[in-house]
Image (cartoon, rainbow, N blue to C red; front, side):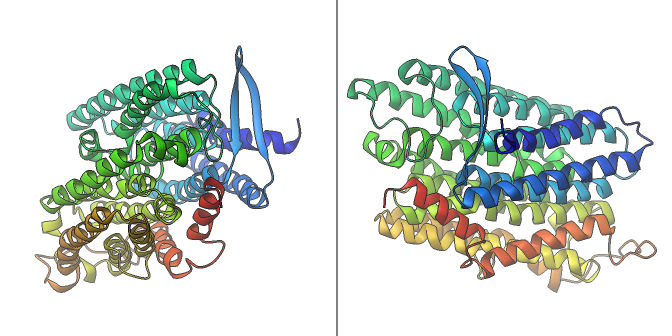
Length: 497
């Protein structure tokens, strides 16, 4: 095997080995733990950078190892997977820096960062999986590796949240396994292929394939937080801010949405899925989830819960783009994998900054906080405006392409969903911005620590970088190297020109 054959596996191993080593690092060895985290994250970023350039040049990277009789363990780099891998590797590095500062002085840090790395390993495996069997292995490992992060604080609320999280995700995993096994029985081993692999199946199998699609989407819909399978997500907000950022922007909800993209485009194929009639119902579920999540966000005073319901709504933009048949909507849905990740991780970083620095957890406590933490709140403002869809932040690009796609497909109801959602986004974010910048503070803020601008540099710097990336992804959307440029590349390979 050549280096190209090993490269996908090396990307997965870069965080797996890091995580296993960290488990053996003593609690007092914080420098060793931090260096292991950073070396692993930087190594992964370099390896991913090599693969991104190669995939752009249509170079092939594939690791194939024997797993079962007639079934290989397959890791493969393709355009769709590299979009997710690129996002995860960049945000893992930034979240690692953030988590090092956030957890400073707290107990069980080796356990936290060990499972943190295993979580990223699982996410990389999901993104690079070349077939459904490999995908489901990493999908279930993601559930097991994130549970200790959700319950990290060990409080009664954390343990209760972990129980709810496991109930939902294990049920979703069981459904996914049933769907995969059934599909395996109908068509044999299924490897992900651009434009799908099911176009040649017999008409006799259509009823089975309809049922299998519904089961697969239901299983993946748990982590995607599609209504009514979303109940675990707001409950899991008792986890530390870095975990919330990981759940919402990089790992769990993105893994579910990415899985639905894979099923719709690289297993069924858009043309076959449209002929089967499964895309319409999928888009309707997404539309309902978008509006429901936004409405629920309106009533939340707890900042992280408001952001959680915002995620319920925003992640379904990805699914809506999948369900609306046509390349423009696909571009909007695929690029939102990245755009939502950048904006949402910024918002959760800001929530963590407020909690760690000022003890603020509720929106009603945020009056005038922009004068105490101006840089953090500028970052919050950029991300919030992006979620609303204000140009030139990344969220505007997503909504623009989804809207164009809805018009091209004559799905005007989807255009109405986008309009209603945008109005609701404004309704639950603009009052927060008003409190931050225009209302007087309710009391005296805690004084800054020595040599700090407003909070620890390890908390502030990642927040500002992700906010800048959210802005740049929209401002330079027309560039070939932007997330939009890559989404167009993915779409061009999924649709027959």
